Length: 525
Ligand code: FAD
Image 1: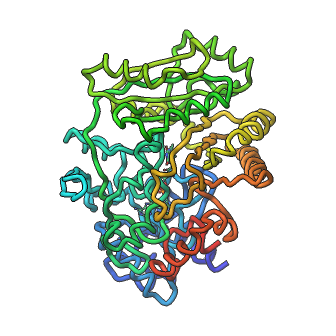
Image 2: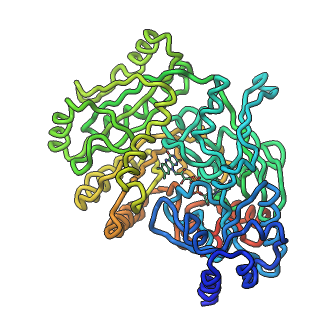
Image 3: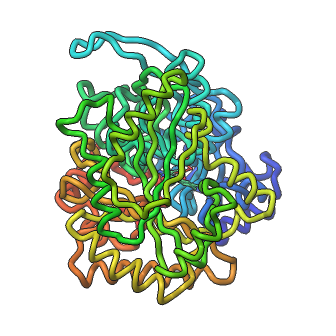
């Protein structure tokens, strides 16, 4: 009720900062004049992007939106909360591409990191080189937490360099993906994005500005990576770079047998004992089902002339599995890369004749989702609800998952239209000291149900998600949610498993007043 009264008071002041100041909520009383002047509490700010996200399901109205001009501003805001009689919640909002309100702050302050980037207040993107006793030297990019990966790509390419590990979609902030893990088809080989970070500047929940790495302030460093925004706001991340390739051989293969599909995926990600340079650079996979179009927003690939025969195959089998791989090259040695690819793909058990290949630029490959996004945006279909479910599943249980979920729940409910991704990763590429929680097997799969729904039927997708989760619980499957969304602390405790104690202790250490990223609903359900 108090919150409602406060919001009503704020809304009634309609945007005039001076008036807004007159009804300053008690929680914000501790902020100084300069910080206060960067807060906005008008209707437009409160009801705008700060209270929404890509999921378009959750909606939480903050008390105010903060527009920092510098990292120091962010530190002062958090310090004011930390020192205040009544602390207020603070959530960094990157691109707001979460799907369940994770970047929102009900009754708190949302830090507008996108605006921070647009005003150029942070460290930007700077490429450098440093000595590392184990490898001689390495190139890195110092990148503001508010920066987009697409901009990191373009800036580093100017030096002939690029990060090694990506997400499928590049219009996400560095701080947002590092708070989760940042995964894609490169993860099996190069690790998630969090494993490519060498150093960070972080503003903790006490408003302290700390530089950390695996050697210095390592507890904070490991806490923040995969830490769901709970321990600090990342204002700079030092990302390792490597020489960038110019072109990519990109291949998709179709399967009707899940066992053959996963066996081949696992063979392709097995890089131990193999010379690194003849391994693939990217391995993913997805489902093709008769409800969905053959090409979707994640990328259009199959030639129009082949749509008919692919659709009849889908109709025959109900579900097909599409293995997707890529091999980078320098743009000149096309013959060599073709030979290497032939060796790598030799003996795979896809359906004969269903082999598709493209040769694209490195940028077009990494930015492959963008054209689909723009198309959906032009049709007004990008901003629909997205009741997504992303899971990590141990290899030993992926066959059960296929029969119980893909071949039963999904087919029975018959509503899945968005992409469904399925691909394996190697656990040894993840650093267990970091907060990200993954299954305890050498190989585990990520399965992503990337649903787009209508405004009136997202609950049907949610019901399907619940049925899938219940199936996993009933089958004793040790699955973890990726981009997790839980409602009770008991569920969070299970999610982190043996890491929960450390996670909770680190929260006490770095954000003892439980100020940061309340939208994750871990410590304040
Ligand atoms: P936000 O949604 O703004 O924030 C997410 C969380 O991080 C919040 O808790 C927020 O408070 C916190 N946070 C934000 N900035 C900072 C910061 N600087 N410091 C500390 N905490 C911060 N993920 C993958 O791993 N792989 C993919 O291939 C992939 N593809 C995607 C495609 C699409 C179309 C979408 C919508 C999402 C995809 N994601 C993917 C998920 C995405 O990585 C996460 O949702 C990520 O959090 C989005 O970044 P953001 O900048 O929008 O973060």
